[in-house]
Length: 95
Ligand SMILES: [Zn+2]
Image (cartoon, rainbow, N blue to C red; front, side, top):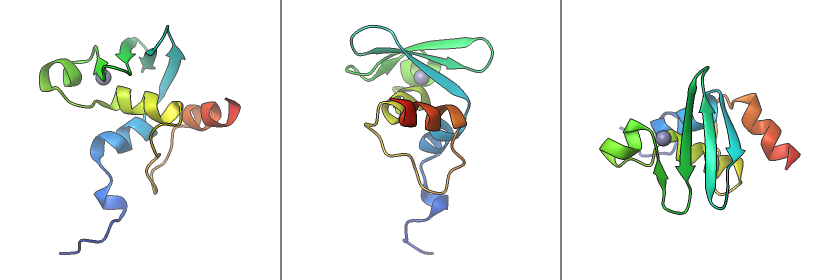
């Protein structure tokens, strides 16, 4: 077994946060709407680290939506070797 950091070692939530199609829209101080898929919208409180999704509410996880917001605003590194959602690249470049 190798201990070297590789693509396989990227946290699964980080990978999904970077690669899945999501749109982040600012929604007040410290608040962001994350539009995921066709119908789902979650409000992320980036200061409190809370999100409306089940992953955050029931499993107390640092969910992919919160991670995506952090990536979109430049507070979280986008993992290497991940196929990044073009929307995330756009926002990083545009802002
Ligand atoms: Zn969430």
